[in-house]
Amino acid sequence: MTRAQRTLYSALGLTGFLFFWELSLRSGLLPGSLVPLPSSIPGVLWLELLDGIWLDVVRSSLSHYSVGVLLGSTLGIAVGMSAALLPRFNAAHSWLARLLRPIPPLAWIPFAIIWFGINPSAAAFIISIGVFWINYFASYSAVHSIDPGYDEVARAFGQQRFLARLTKVSLPAAAPGILGGLRAGLGQGWMTVVAAELFGIPGIGQRMMEASSLLATDIVVVYMLTIAALYATFDFLFMVVQRRILRWQS
Image (cartoon, rainbow, N blue to C red):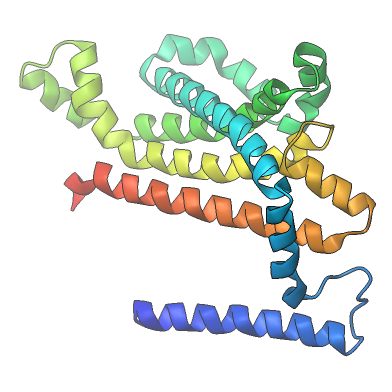
């Protein structure tokens, strides 16, 4: 199947889903009081844009999303690579990692409120935790799985210093795995940002909570689609950058 055919079938599938959704509501199969009409969503989005609400909440969410993703990704990659390259460091922190990893990011909300208060810093902290572990394990696995023969070849060609082997051997060899973790972290960040805002921090999550309390499901759907659009945009841009970074593989 060609790329054009896949795109066509995907578009037909989405169109069919929206048509069935609309038809089910108009025929009374689904309760119109609890599920919005797809055809009403563009008008609701337009009203949110006119009132300036959409831009405000998206800007707020983007601010602590960006901080959380940047912090979690940087620390996750640094600690994960260090654990793979330094056996003593790996042994020293391995039990701590196994203890903290199963704790979901949302379980840290009480501490985030106590430490930072109800402000964007708390949301960024929650987001960074979820992003950290994804990048940590992706980086650790990517570096740990590098063929030891690469290091021996580098030494044979005079690369005796650790930093030289890191930049010329370890990072290029592990780059696909590290970038895969970064990409997954971008999605995890958006999945966490809404929940991190539910306790009163301005953003998409708070707006969705306000709308749901008023049974304004059309507004909820608008911001669900907003999150999907933002993630798709970030993912597309990241893939463009990733292809340029890994162009040496082709």
